[in-house]
Amino acid sequence: MRIDVLTLFPKMFEGPLGESIIGKAVAKGLLDINISNFRDYSDHKHQVVDDYPYGGGAGMLLKVQPIYANLADIEATSPTTKKRIVLLDPAGKRFDQKMAEEFAEEEHLVFICGHYEGYDERIRTLVTDEVSLGDYVLTGGELGAMVMIDATVRLLPEVLGNELSAQTDSHSTGLLEHPQYTRPAEFNGMKVPEVLTNGNHKLIAEWQQKESLRRTWERRPDMLENIALTEEQQQWLKEIQAEYEE
Image (cartoon, rainbow, N blue to C red):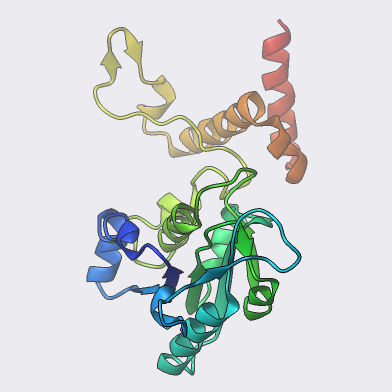
């Protein structure tokens, strides 16, 4: 996968995208990340990238010309790849695990990080997606882009040491992930559930599914409205709910 990022603050990406899982993916040749400062593409003699809005209003808007020129350069260096161009914007569709999975299927992603009050509306004609990290406003799109890149890259083949890790993550299955334990088997009087130590894989799998359902019902019951539970899961849920009524 190739990822391009258009930003006014390239140095913000040096640490987050050069370390840990993402840094290893780049080192393995599984990922190519390019950071562009779109100020370099401004046709203004002082490399101005923003201006006052027509009709008045608070703040400044990013100009369309630098963004257009930066995207044109990316197209020239990679003319054969289909690009998904993502505009980071508080008014965009909220980013979630499903979108990360969609992004992970793409060959080439481009993230545009905004600043100031907003965008010249014509910038929106250059993109395929307008995406928000959540229902709040950041000072710029850089942190949002980093989060989206991280959530996407970890889903790429061979990036994680164990690919099943991503498949069983919270939100990937529609439920929150079940509780997990490691050694020692007992710590300060707290014991690992016996079912996890008896070697019966069928019982372990059933326990994990039940506890995943329990955790989701306890912490994020809203998630259960968006998935179709099997008959077995529905019965488990009734049993879990009954425990709280006793």
